[in-house]
Image: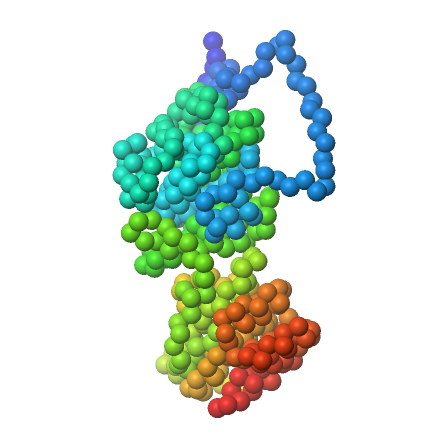
Length: 459
């Protein structure tokens, strides 16, 4: 008879031990280790049982011809913003993992995309968390035409794999991977063993039948994808769907992509009838108001340039140490810029509280926003409005010098498209191709003092 043994698995990192510990020795997480019973002889992945080859048919290698100019025939998702983040569409046989906070719109996004693709090819939507009637109610709210979308409300991995092998759809959506279970494993759905086995089985059937899989995954309270880390390594693309609960826009960001650029950004807007694409996202992040402490920058998310407003507020402090608060910008970046301004421009900023925020709730992590942050701080400190139609691009060094950032030409083209009149950038770039545009004045500055003088020259 087969003998069951117990192992203890960390639900955060997937580390296994032979005895219970209150704290995981690998990741240091407390109370994350649970007991899982494994039958050494009978515990097998369901995919292994269904698709195990016979002894008479040995494996054979396949010889393929690789040509340099051959293009991948991608599957359009039905939405340009999603295709942008994917790198041009879904690659046949690939696995795409979509994660995000509860209620952010992951199921709505994948259902809308599956419905759009179902007009031209076979698509299977596996609802593991909702019944078929619940999915139909949401589908009726976001779609007003007929669709050939196949719907399967099932959580048993064996039934899902049989349906995939029988139907052989071009695209399949799994909502969600944490709700699936393999009956051959004794652990509960959502555990490390279940997520690992289910994702591995789905990967094998997808590669064998050349099916593009869209997999929805849950996130933890820290915002990271739940389940073992092997899940992120297993899939080809990892997307995060994020946004403010109190705002209508949603950001789809590429974290990992084997078939395109990472850190790409797609912008959607949540409406009563579902998600709609935002073709000009700069309009969402521009306040279109003039006041002291507001500066406009051009940041790059992947290959997409975005014009956004930065807002700074300085008040005399009533504490021994001034307060520094940021929203959308790293706090250490603000401390560094304040120190540079105080050192090079002789501004007594240590006696002022400083509050910095990015309009629209966008997270700005790149150093190209430094010059705009400095301009907003000086504008609020002097209580002077910056010139209307001025925009900033550049990184600030510790000595006050300005440095160029990546994709400068794409940023300048975005400034021209939006119709700004003055642009301040670091020195060291050839702008001869932009001098033909008489509507935009480009000023080069070598240090922070010179840039601020340009920004406040009309004041």
